[in-house]
Amino acid sequence: MPPNVERYPIAGGGSLTVKVKAGDKFTLKDVQGGQPVVLSFSDAKGRSDVNAIGGRGQSLQIFGHASPAGTLAEFWVNQDGNLKIMTPAIDMSPEAQDTVTDIELRLTRAHPKLKIIGDDLPEPLGDILQDIRIRAATARSFHVKAGEYIQIIDVSGRQMTDF
Image (tube, rainbow, N blue to C red; front, side):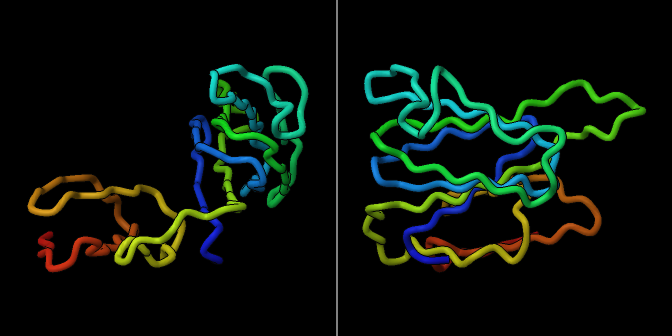
């Protein structure tokens, strides 16, 4: 991806808050379809108003149970603040096919921050299920299911990894 584009997966039933600035553009993709999304925006003083992203009122709902897979929605940010993206989940009926699904955010920065040498990470090899950063000289355990892949990137350099 270009250096000014950031990619964030948002799990169904979850949320993500990200700082945005005037001039930024973001695109949301309903990856598998059928996932409602609620957007809210708060300015630097904490006032909630989605007018900063082209909506009206306190929140803006996009997509829904009838949206097809791959549906896109694009927005421009007209003031600095915090963008919150929520993917609500409802109790699923065994007869219905209304499971929660993932949403993808692509944020195009109008003014990307300066890159620090060694801060660049390569694109993931596949869809990210977990993103775990383990500080140098520490250890951590986590669960991996059969068939899942693990991608290890030594971001600090000269670290040893054991399984």
